[in-house]
Length: 370
Image 1 (cartoon, rainbow, N blue to C red):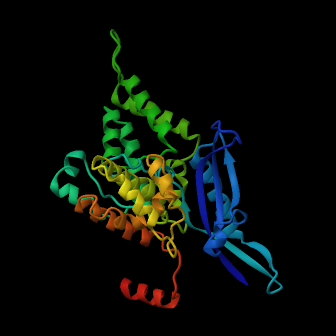
Image 2 (image 1 turned 120 degrees about the vertical axis):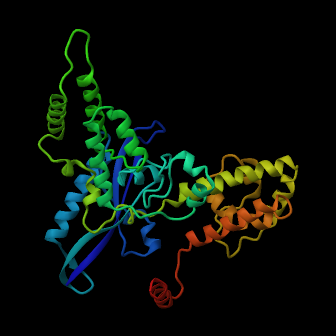
Image 3 (image 1 turned 90 degrees about the vertical axis):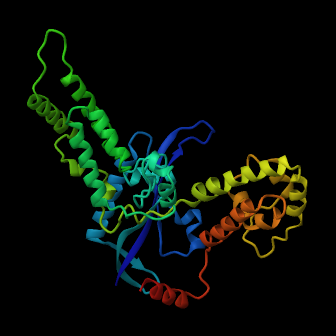
């Protein structure tokens, strides 16, 4: 019997010290996606793969990719204790998890602060466009999906720009107009830009180098930096990984994006309004009276939430998002109440952890896709 084993691949930066002193390491873990959700949450089912305080994230991912591809090509022979027979396991990557900065790096993306801030599609634009009515409205609709092929092509364009005069501006424009930035090649790209500046600089009393000589020197430097490899070999290894589309198979990290993002800042503004109108005590009394039975609300300690209102963490925001419309009714403007209503609906959908009727769910998904 041959079994396919889908793997959840996770990478993040962690501290290698037991003490509070930060000692940065990058680590990769894997989990078997065939397991139930309650089993995936247990430490036993999270397997350590590799870690290093020195190797860059993409270097670790290159080793992980090579190991996974080798295992998929040759198969892994194991013993099935239930059926009492030898089986072959074929592992493959299902998706890659991580926080927002790490996911951006894994997608060769410049991150949330760039003009084209999404690493799944090309939504966004220059500042002038996003501040216009048309541009602002476009942010709330999905753009054209990114693909590994287009991202790889964008990286090649950046190296083409690095060979030309005024390379700094051209490379920067290429990045800002696409949102593409490959961390695996950033050092090489920057060294080529700096070398180009030096070669084109005309010293007093000396003749400027010809364009052909500058290009030849840059190409030689480029080959030395690649150390015998090709540009395609040096580009982010995850972009060419079989079975995974880096821009699609990378789920949104909900903790920082939603709870410590939208919900946290909306909470801060709401508290400001409550204190300004001197009605925070009314809010606290309502929070005390909330019956949390039957709710997915792990923490609704009213005294703690109202006293440490500026230092709350994810579990507090997850609980608050489910009850805020009932607590701030007639205490805040209608627009704020509407905002909390929408946030509550979003949180309920995002943290919907079980499917009561799987067959009906699968049929409805097939119908909706057709």
